[in-house]
Length: 79
Image: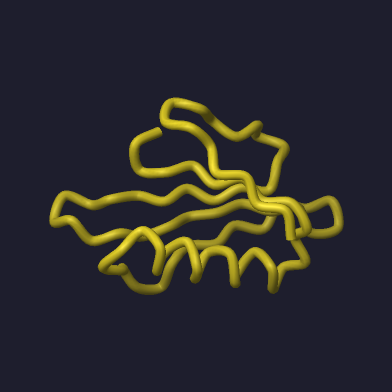
C-alpha cells in the first residue's frame, strides 16, 4: 500500500482514500476514515482511543488495508 502523510494544513482530496488522526482534549488519539470500495464510500472510525499517534495510524492503516485500499492519505492532528 502506498501511504502519503500530509503536511500540516494540507487536506486530502474528498475523492481519495484517507484517514484523519484526531487528538482529543484529554490527549488521547482516535481516527476516522473514508475509502472507496467498489464505487461506494465506506466510513470507518477507531473503536477505542490510543495513547500515541503511531498506534492510531497503525490501526487505521490496518482497517484501510482490510477494505482493499492500495493508496492512502493521512491527515494528522495538526492539519
